[in-house]
Length: 495
Image (cartoon, rainbow, N blue to C red; front, side, top):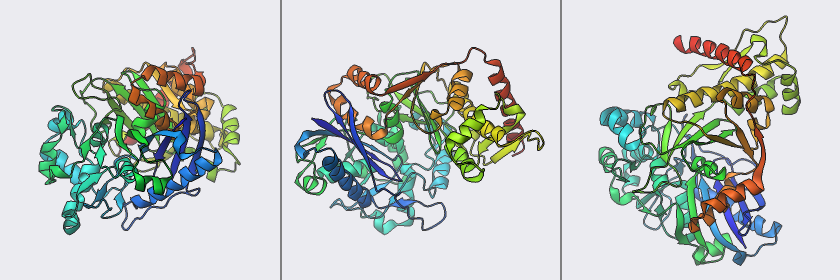
């Protein structure tokens, strides 16, 4: 018997099946094979059709069942992970009224900034744990202001994962974790943020019913079975945004546990039991998957680094090299500190952790007689690692004391230079696991039973690859990091 896990990204849908008895991953497929497109009617806009996600999910399920010879009745539960902060609005028949305004759409930035100013930083930090910023609530306010006739037809708003659960079951609901990522949750009063709805002029009736993150949320109905190929009556047991779900996939639930990802952009996601927020402008704070009303808080502090893997990919595309392996070999021939060469890797737009400054990528201290592309490769890996360490220092100032760091076995964490640099500078082991968001979502379907110990054991037994240990000789890394930080401060002071 199996659980099905779905991970709804903005570039593709991934579907996984895991064995219920062991938590072992049986298979993962991706749909479509090429990246999904986005609609951008204006600069800074990004939209997708919610129904397209559903088509790709149904195709992925069909492929999974055929490829691994699994029948619809062998799938005993569903877990859903999804791209965060998206807005789906439906009429009273459940039909989308417009394309989804997804996470990377920036049209509502000014709306959120004005709300932060008008409501006040103290109230936003203590009750929302964030600025309203460019999150789902601000996007819904944009629809109210700019598409008033369409707004009047809204029956409910949903996050992307809520919509997919609805397509399976014909039931509309959401979670506290989901509402918090949309900045609809008041942590001080443990309720929907009525004061923000009132400020934005959004009716409370548009908020879906709330269900637990782990538990029986709804079941597949006959229409859902006909379209998806999953048997009617199959329970949906779990739903969460992609970053909290990535943390769950790495068994990160408790204060001091940190999940890191080093893809196109980098993310450090740390769990705390504190509602204190000092860095609301640079760090996002959401209800983690195991947050419960009237219990010890479980908050996920999310710090994003835009200039991560995209920086290394740019070098691959623009240096005379054939592969990341060749770049890593070139880098490994250079000593720690890259002989003074520094690469500041922030060329992927404004960086929230740098107070939304856009400073670009910069290579400094390059000597045209002594340095070559090996130095640039090493400086890039170190520069990206240093940006992670810089981010960890921000999280530390916001009350995080890391006890364990776990990361997926992909992208930057496959580089010994990158992982060893981070581990040594933060003086912390980094555990590497071979898992994905879709596999994590599938396993999380079992957490309706409440057995977190068995869940963690399945991850360790099936997925642990290796652990990077901090080097005892820290001085060359500290010197290189301080050199990098000095260069960064010069740039920031001149912006």
